[in-house]
Amino acid sequence: MLVLYDIEACPYCRLVREVLCELDLDAVIYPCPVGGMRFRPDALDISGVSQFPLLLDPNTGDQILESADIIDHLYKHYGNARRRSPRGLRRQLAVTGSMAASAARSVGGVRGLKAAPSYAAKQPLELFSFESSPYSRPVRELMTELEIPYILRNFAKSRWQEMGPPLVRSRWFPDAPITSPNRQRLRELTGRSQVPYLIDPNTGVSMFESVDIMAYLKDVYGRK
Image (cartoon, rainbow, N blue to C red; front, side, top):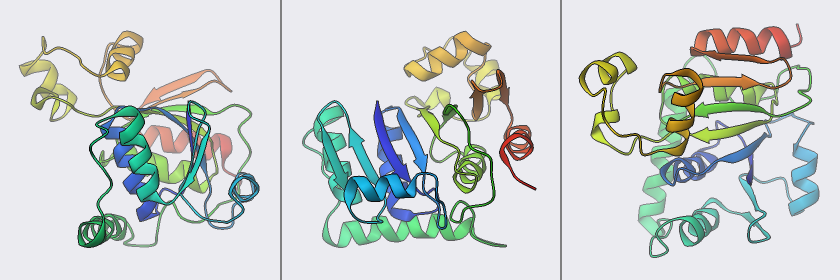
């Protein structure tokens, strides 16, 4: 499985996560917030620099810094090989848009950037999510701050019938085919296609609803 050393609030990391979501790729996320000591030293040992995102691809043996190079690699090996990360002005616009998305979440303080006191998770958790979900994002931000490693199960929407809240989809499009493997897996597990959904193998707890997930993470992994 792909491995991404990541900071949720980093606009360059966001660009990589967007492509992971677009290509329906799973990845192990090692959060590396500012001040974090759980995974940042590992990233430094691997790359020689404290720079993020950092992608490790065990399928090709590549270790890649620079979001544009990572995106090119993902398209080449897992998507449309003719596509490339934007360059020049288009890249500046993409980065600016990503920074604006981070800034919009920064009212009252930047989230998903700095480490908070926490207890280490023995095993990575599992999070069904998609990048632009306003309900998934706060969960990923908190997991970054608490330095909780997790398997990111991307849950992109590939059909217009998949848009909208679960109640709308189940009422108006109950027979719409499921094209995402993770959507199919979650439907088989829970009977629902809804994110975020957290699985914690350390405690056996599984749950929907971002507010409940965040309360759980703070209670189990947050240090008072």
